[in-house]
Length: 266
Image (cartoon, rainbow, N blue to C red; front, side):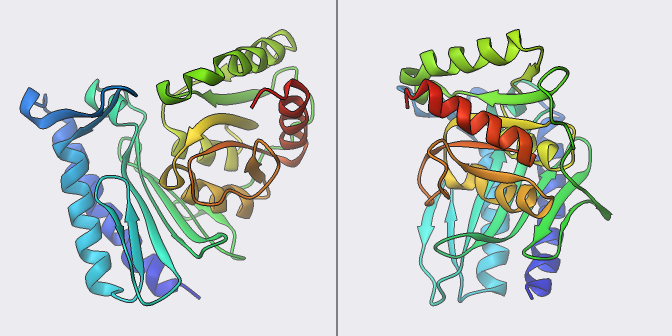
């Protein structure tokens, strides 16, 4: 199931990757960058728009029955309950500053869960993907979460966008606790890739505040199909709203979730 969707989606993201890299190789002018929200310091570039137009155009043509919900252009209803969730460029600020951590993220979901997900890293040419009940992959190789059970030497990702600044105390509590337990902590600014890195064992877990559904949808199924666990800070499935999210291999997921609950500031 969903083989045709995956085939077309993966080829489409490969086309989109070429667009991203063409723009990455040059400096964008001021006319090509604008703030979506100065209050939350969110930006959008012409590259985001071009990639989104390319992907949305192909998906609408190939799967007219499916809805599409994309970060920049909003939501389009379809006849089916299934819909695509698209982030044309997760990590736009990184892309703009030539910091090599950004991704194109696409998932096919129903109202409850993701059914297929792809996250494309244009820089490294790594495509992470999963189809429900068929496993997770990096390019053509099957991937699995790590087996790490101890905090010493574990590696976590974290993230807190400016819009979640009211949660800064909780973020600092988590960081301090894990740091003092001997864990390594990274903040790359690209949630989609951090989730994929957790799925393949480069990381052992992550906690990130106020993520949009297009940020976490693909990573959710990629992580779970790799043997990992994923939830909101309250331990529930996300509901396609902005959510505080936590994930990891089973041991680290439980630890992070219990730790978040003990601080209980969210």
